[in-house]
Length: 473
Ligand code: NAP
Image (cartoon, rainbow, N blue to C red; front, top):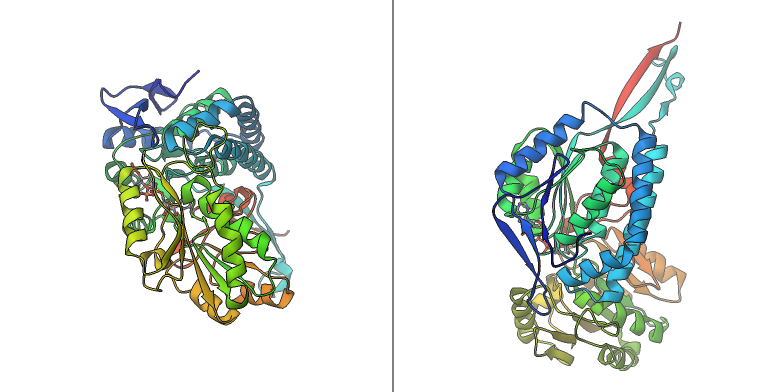
């Protein structure tokens, strides 16, 4: 069994290989090395694409793909604690939160198995037109081909699962490039897929320099779809370069929440405290900007700050810890710079020894501050008093991002107005926009992306329709 301090090989065409060179993975909390992985370059990436392209000649029937996905879910249940500890070690995610991620990956595989079993095309109502009379027609859903999957550091297990599981459900082989800072969970998933009976070549994992491996995935015409989760700059850059393929992007956000005058303020404050700082704000849908109608602003702030100050900051392996470190020193420096540069008033928070940032709440920053318009991706949230719901919606829409947004209100009319007017891929009502369950269509508009994940939606992206028209005798 792999542990987090082992050395790890790469999975290429069913074999675990070494390359003579290594990538080191360090704990974001202690700086200790928690794993060494064989380092891939362009050569290994090209071999991975060769292996993936070959298996397209021996498709696996849907029932076999579904059975493998179900077995992966079972194995993940058995190895749940092992996976959670791997996520905690490499990402610095608090262990209780890491366990939630591991459980969610079980759901992702389970939903993907369902999709494999029901994957089917449509019957076209041909007699609905003169031209179609006398014919029957239907579509087949065919695997798109080799998929290049690129994943970020922050959900190193479940966001990899959101690519691997639907790809197998769709019948597509994968070349996976996980984040260099957190590849161990992905390698553990690959081990479980192999143990579940996945034949050689269907999954190939290459860990190494992003641009070198990314170039192979962009340039090789046999890779028909790149599924990318990560930052907006990298994602849109890949799409620009890969003209002839589908490039599905799941990108960042600067997640807003509106607290209307009629909201249940204690509930809103508790939800914001929990969802702005979980995993030190390093979720693409961490609450970042809170717009509160002026009549309940003081009440909201007075409820929020004690919740935030009660969060336990520290070692992610400690069962009591709510907020661990951010991923690396560069991220910490940038986040602290943004806090210092803000024109708002810091109500609580700031830095701590040992690479940690205390959960930070900034009141009434200016609209141009980075904390107001860029993605912080750290344990920081802003609270701004607004005069009306219209102002709140206008401010919430005032960034280049559009992944998820939320509103707390007791009024259906407010909730529906927000749902209609917030320019986001998802809107939550009386729940933080950090909420995600794995069957949902999840994805953004504007700079936040161009697709929806969730096994049902991802399988549609990973397949193509082929039309069959039959002349009736
Ligand atoms: P990132 O720096 O963009 O990295 C994401 C992945 O892209 C990593 O595997 C990285 O490899 C790779 N990469 C970097 N440059 C590349 C290039 N030129 N060509 C090909 N691949 C390249 O993002 P991150 O810091 O890991 O993750 C944080 C971001 O992800 C945030 O913006 C967050 O909002 C977003 N995110 C979005 C979602 C969503 O579902 N919408 C979910 C989670 C996170 P290396 O690690 O080797 O550099």
